[in-house]
Structures are given as C-alpha cells and as structure tokens.
Length: 145
Image (cartoon, rainbow, N blue to C red; front, side, top):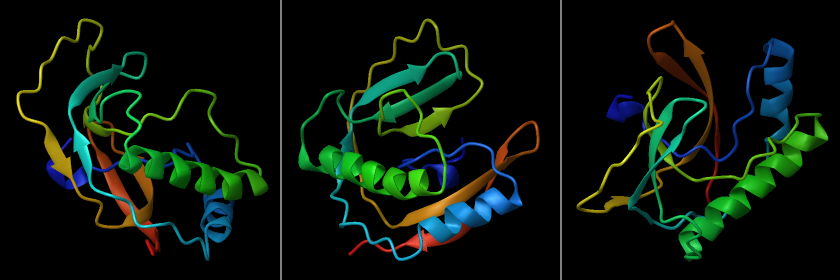
C-alpha cells in the first residue's frame, strides 16, 4: 500500500453495484461525526484469511480516540442498516492497512517507535482493483464537527 492510500476504515461495505452505491451515499447524507481525536498506532496485526498486514492502536485500548472510532463505526452502520446493508459479524478493529495479499501466518513484527495518527477527514471511498493495486475514488465527505 502506498502511503497516499493509508486510511482507517470506519465501515467496510463490500461490493456494490451502482444502485447500491447510490443508496449507501444517500444513507450517509447529513451524517455528522464528532471530531476524531489523534491516535497512536503501536501494534502490528494481520487479518490472516484476507492476507492483510496492518498497524493499529493497542488491542482493547480504552483510550477516547479508539472509543470515538467505535462510536463512528456504530453511527455509520446504523444508517447503512436502514438501507439493507449487512454489518459484518467480526469485531471492528481500527487499523491502517500496510500490505495486501501477504502471507501473514507467521507474522512477528515489532514496532520500535509508535506512529501518531491525526484524522484529516472522513470520506466515503470506493475501491477498484486492477488486479495488482487498488485505486480509491472519493464519493463523498462526512463532516467531522
């Protein structure tokens, strides 16, 4: 993942056709999220089945910045559920994806210096794969007030 694509996903919707994408965009219109506090990314992890290596806050961290992301996640999914989108069963894990298609089964990485993360905005983004990389297209911005 190039650093220009680094982001923290608040809600992953999955594949959508044009009609479904329009419903997702419309469902989030008018949503205002509380400002998200800066975060410290201090732990490597992996979604082994998906082959994604990530960097995120300490697991189970109760700091307000992590709680704010969980709150935003719930707010977004409340609206998405109203248009029939199904929330994924797995637990929400705030993270920045670093590698995709990685053989992550023997991951043993140590981070020497935690990385400060400052939220710049919240966007609704579509991801398109060309087989080698993902291209991101901003569909809408969700204000942080």
